Every structure is written in structure tokens, then in C-alpha cells.
Amino acid sequence: MKQDLQDDTSLNPLGDSKTARASESWVFWGVIGCWGAVGAAVLYWVGVIAVSPLDLAEWIVNAAYGTEVAVEDIHNFIAGPLLFIRELFAGLSWAALGIPWVGFIRYRVGVIEAGSKEAYHLKVRKAAEDAAKAAPVGLLVGVGISRGGFLSSSETLVETSEGFFRVSGLIRTVKKGEPVFTLGDQLLIGEGNSQKRYTVVS
Image (cartoon, rainbow, N blue to C red):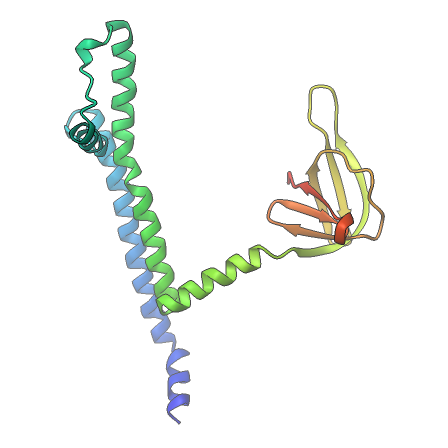
């Protein structure tokens, strides 16, 4: 009876709505954090913010190794472009703070939607295992060169019993009726040691 109650609770749409609201809350703060990082980069470039994560990294390196180089020691012809590049990357270092923030938000949303950290990691592991498996896409019906020439790379249109695939390069040594699989961006034709791989263009 207790197990039945637990099952009924897991199927309760109210619980699903709470999960959805929690996920939306984390997504909202994720968007705010990303725009905040981009805004900080813009404020640094216009001079409102005087320091950047790159400044902190340089300070740590200089304190540890004493490798600071004064701008006055560099020829003016070189110092100008170097200073521009340095300021560009200093601003981008603010924007780059949004990258780990996005990763953390995705992790938190994944945990909330999965129900627990264990369920989330199990879901990620299963997705990785599924991505590593070749998916059958029918039997080979025929191939035809769709583009090829002196100035353009050759492509081949592969027709299977379930659809069409455009791959890079020319295909000649395949037999009609061979099984065809997809694995990531690869198209696999045949089986065993005679299996051939081609990169899918579209």
C-alpha cells in the first residue's frame, strides 16, 4: 500500500508543476547571470569597470613569477595593438564567466528534472551510451555523386531504405543491400571488417 502511495505521488501532476517551476527559476537566473557577464564586459570596455578576471590572473602570475612587463618598455608601434588586444581579451574574460555559470545551471536543471543527482548522472550516462551505439538507418539502395570537381570537394548522396544522406567524398566499393548505420556525424556502410565510414554533410 505504501508503495502504491509513492507511485501515485510520483505521478502527481502537482509534483510535475513544482519541478517545472523550479527548473524555470534556475533557467531565469541562468539567463540573468549570462547577460550580467556580457554586461560586465561592455562596462569594462567603456571604462565603468576598471578591473577584469584577466587582471586578477595577471596579478597572480606576476606575484608568483615576477614576469610583469611595462608598456613603456615596448615600442609604441607594437604597444598600441598589443594594448588593444589585451583590453579586448580582458573584457571577454568577463563574458567568459558566463560559460561555467551556464554549465552549472544546466546541471541544476537536470538534477531537478531527473529528481535526484543519482538519477541525473544515470540519465547522462545512458545518453552517452546511446550516443556511442550505431543506429540502423535501413539497407543501402544506391549511391550517386552529388557534387565533384576541380575546385570543390566531392560529395556522395547515399540512399537507404529509410532516407537519404549526403556524405563527404566518393563512394564506389559498396554493395546494394548492405546495412547502413549512423554514429554521431558518421555514416557506416556494411558490417564487420568490411564496414566503411563516411562523414555526413547533411
